[in-house]
Image 1 (cartoon, one colour):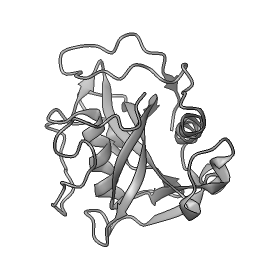
Image 2: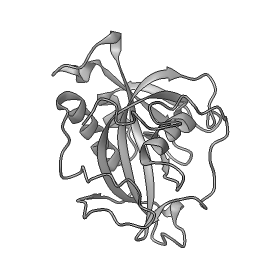
Image 3: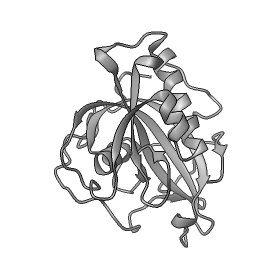
Length: 214
């Protein structure tokens, strides 16, 4: 797995710097679905304190960026619907920009997680089932203005604080995967299903997903 899995992509690929609009995408008409699952992409934005580089005991030097929710307690990592005109990598970068107002480079694919959301029930996903494809994103720029700044707050916190304040158990698992990846370059194969390049007309290649209810 390369240092920047977005290299070679256009638009928001290598970084999400080419996102001038301050309006978040809304609506479901371009939303991807697969076998009753609403497909989601997101990331764990991170940085190193005091300019530290990666080493075997880097967890204490790592900070992650989380955002408040629009309907309940706790903190979240940026995530949102993966749409038909973008790759999962582009969707993850877009969500980091829209929800948290940050730009950066993706540093690894962490895996996919299944969860349920009553708020996201639709004719294509009547049970509110979602499948989230998550990445690690090293933050290179924080913006003073971003699309969802009036509805969300953002905060840099330690890994320990993130584990304590994270609203959903599946996101805690994502953070654990992120730490594992940044420490060793590996991911837990139980969670790290292959990332499909296009799910418009195809089915994921028999992934092993983590299934949780939220």
